[in-house]
Image (cartoon, rainbow, N blue to C red):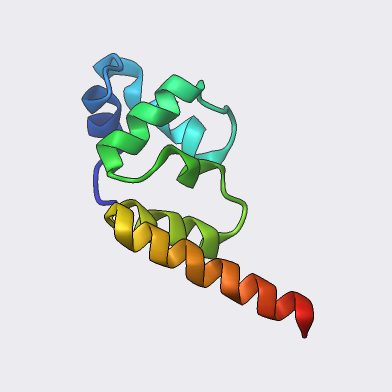
Length: 91
């Protein structure tokens, strides 16, 4: 996202001296952040918290795209996804 690890950590309330190391450990998967920390990171990076828990990059990308849609657009996307699912089951 272009934000240095130490700045990102400070942005979400971490101590400046340890923020870079902590963010690095989260990023590399050495440690998993508590959900509150993940939610704070998500807010700072403008992504939904669920983004961090996706094991499929395409699903993560869809979550980011969906997050900026209004309710009507989300309903349309859900209807389309439901239609696609139904057509793949019957095929």
